[in-house]
Image 1 (cartoon, rainbow, N blue to C red):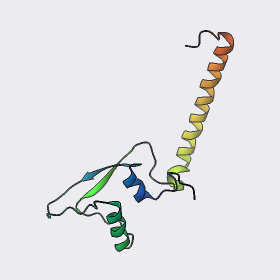
Image 2 (tube, one colour):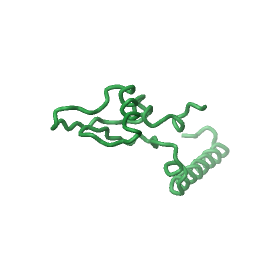
Image 3 (cartoon, rainbow, N blue to C red):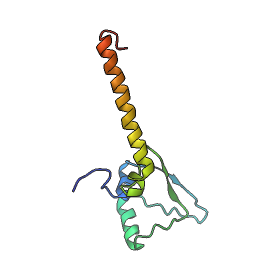
Length: 110
């Protein structure tokens, strides 16, 4: 299996640093219920039957330019498809302009 960000499980990306997160603490009940290690987090996830119920302390995700999952909603929606197409067209126009400039004045490319 490929070891890309798209196929790496979400919880592993939280712990390896691919996704940026900040701990938000609320210790009114006296305990911190955030897991300290990946092993503890996976054990809690397995014990809870896969539920992601939030306790008093929780992780807050911060956008780093990486979309958190590989689902079609995040990567293949029409909005992102249009963005990717616009980016490709913009790159082609910029490259064409540089090539045209290089043909006319190859010594002055700044």
